[in-house]
Length: 230
Ligand SMILES: NC(=O)c1ccc[n+]([C@@H]2O[C@H](COP(=O)([O-])OP(=O)(O)OC[C@H]3O[C@@H](n4cnc5c(N)ncnc54)[C@H](OP(=O)(O)O)[C@@H]3O)[C@@H](O)[C@H]2O)c1
Image (cartoon, rainbow, N blue to C red; front, side, top):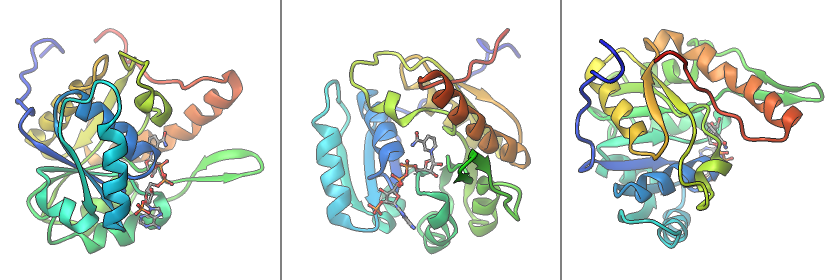
């Protein structure tokens, strides 16, 4: 199958929940999905912070989708697709606490387990192999995918950026769930979702973010990835 031939599902009616969506990455993704007309729920450990972030995002230029905020559990309950955008430090605890509301749902992990020291960023070893596989282990009844690791929150949140110039690598073992996430990535102007394999290959995708951060620092930019000949 060529890239153009792939049939992707319609995702315009899905409710997208962003868990830990009050941070840079969550706000950036919320903005882009709301700009695409999707309904977005911004989750937080505090419903007030979720609501405040939602008001901020809803006021940004070009937003046509409804954006509301709530606590993470309520967002997980109401979402069709939930995206985990918390720091690695809070990852396992956050995901484990949402096992029930996330049962049966597509859960997208974009968490990069990274450490930083005086020599710069580095990939942290994860017992399960990756953050996404940790999520899959903690949420056995959810349809876990991994995506959006390499998108710069700064670019996503910049209203002057009309087209986000990069490919989003999507990984997962559930082909139908992967197709939904590919389509979701494609709702962001300029972005292509690219199927990049099973969840067991998520570790190196997450780790590659350390290299991108080094590139960003060295060349003072917000670099993204493109897969060529596709
Ligand atoms: N920033 C980027 O450009 C980027 C790009 C790709 C992927 N990512 C990944 O996306 C994730 C979020 O990045 P970010 O820069 O948005 O992070 P962040 O701003 O530090 O955190 C995001 C949100 O997570 C919540 N949070 C913080 N500590 C927590 C904890 N211990 N337990 C549960 N929730 C906690 C906070 O929301 P409340 O206090 O409201 O609950 C916070 O606003 C990271 O795993 C990162 O690897 C980031």
